[in-house]
Amino acid sequence: MSARFWPPAAMFVANYIPLQVGAEVVGEVITFRDVPNVVRAENEVRRSLVKGLVAKHTIDDFVHGHPAMKQVIEKVRKFSRVDSTVLITGETGTGKEILAQSIHTLGPRRKGPFISINCAAIPDQLLESELFGHEEGAFTGSKHGGKPGLFELAHNGTIFLDEVGATPLSVQSRLLRVLQEHEVMRIGGDRLISVNVRVIAATNQDLCLEVQKGRFREDLYFRLDVITVHIPPLRERIEDLPLLVQDLIRRCTRNPKAHSLTIPERPLKKLMELDWPGNVRQLQNFVEKLVILCDDGYRDDTFEELYANLLNYSRIREREAVPERPPLSPYVHGNPRDDEAIAIRKALEESRFSKTLAAKRLGVSRTTLWRKLREMRITCKGI
Image (cartoon, rainbow, N blue to C red; front, side, top):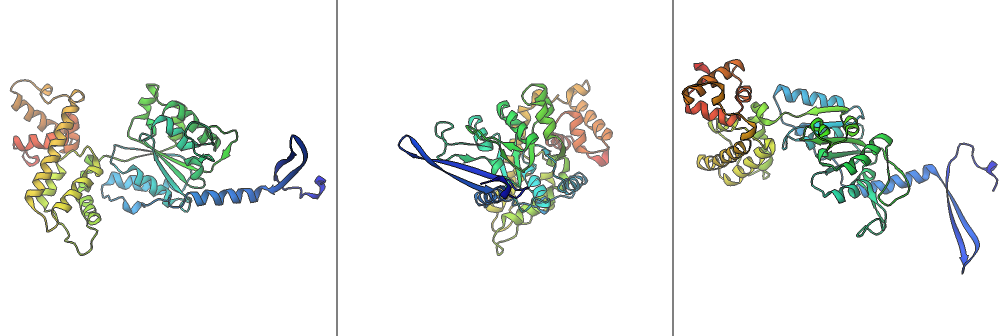
């Protein structure tokens, strides 16, 4: 067929199949498909594969009242309107995936898939296959017919790379190519597959430090660190704890006819004295236990038992971090107990009576500072 019969702006994909009789080629079958139809068919296949891979959280699920968290929410609303890569930083348990899902649901890709993967939870040799897919026979145990990677499945949507700092260097190089070229090549494959994906990454590590130590590629870091959102730990927004407890109780009490648990003010204040190294996830664990054990109403003995477990865990964490935290005694000399009291009073005054800042100045946790304040009967009013 002469080329003049084709529309001048049209593009086609040709498929050639030889017809053989024995070893002799006696003919061929050539099929032509216009590119737009091929792309539509490919998108339909991708959509059928990603059913159920959707974001389950919105920005309303982020309970807050603290000014620092209000700034975070304002950033999320602003950043969701653009398509740039986002890097979310924060300690474990602060709600990084909820924030990632919120960015997705607020943005123009909300109708597309949201796919999440924890890079630290998958062995190195499998992570590459999960992210980029593989062709049939690419390695021992590879899936018959091959398997699309998560980047392919996230086409026209968002992929969330949790604990991105844990990715091995071999995967980082391929990840960099996806961010730069917007295309992937399956393991064992020989063709590039275009992907239209927004990348949101999260880490509880200092990626700058990881770059300095040679464990994270500098060029990849700059590709990820286009927009950064930092979620403060619970101890830095401890005023939000009563709101969080109330919301968590509501979520744990699934039966609408069940007794609604109310925690009195004094126990709530005791919870606000803790350091919460596991952040909101640790608080959720505590509240869920309390709701289950107090199914007929709040009981002080149950609370005290669970609170004691929290204290023990905090003390274990403190002992593990002793080399990184100087003791109180180096601040002054003389009688250790008197000197500790002086150091505590001075730290509180210099930090304008913020117990979080005072604990940082003293090199101890909030839990330790609260305990010292009770033991020495030091009150902010008396300073």
